[in-house]
Image (cartoon, rainbow, N blue to C red; front, top):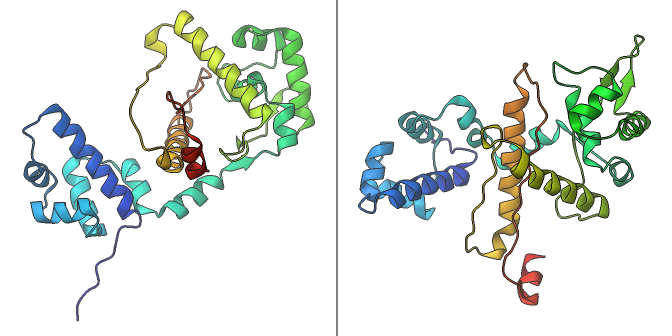
Length: 267
């Protein structure tokens, strides 16, 4: 009886990961060959060629072998062990989808910053202190607190202390562009610009790349960005000693004019 080999759920994703890893190594050493990379990950070159071309899927046994060779830790391996659909559904269960009405009410950046500030060890239920930490006015803090209580994202205990009850939230799907969403993004871009001038680089990371792309891949780019953003959030939220509030702001946009034909193709 022939034993059936179990295919890795996200075989295609791991194939893309290997191709990207090979490209990184080859770009720094023009003499670096496919054969050398095959030896590095513990497979023969013909098998690697079939993997790269999509003619062969990655089995779970092969994945474990390669992951051991290149030093992937359990956290890095986890996404490939689940199908994309399973992974996304598991992540989405943790995120509360905001209605457009709620989102419009609390779209100013400091509403979300106040909720995150409550998760830090230094938080105190004092509007003056919050205003100073976020560099906004006390009236803005008081108004934001009232709105957060109105939508059920903030409660007070018997001692008068504020308790965050929003959990992890997300706004509408990425393709739904609303005035509230645009408002928040513009505000955060302004904060990012201020950070370039005011915050030492040792306490932030702001970088960029300009590259030629196929606009038809925008949906896949969005999926990868969304996955990266949520994975990074999960990693950072595991830390119990959080003491500051940061923003992750990712932009992917064209520098060249997009033709009407390309817009129809990307719709």
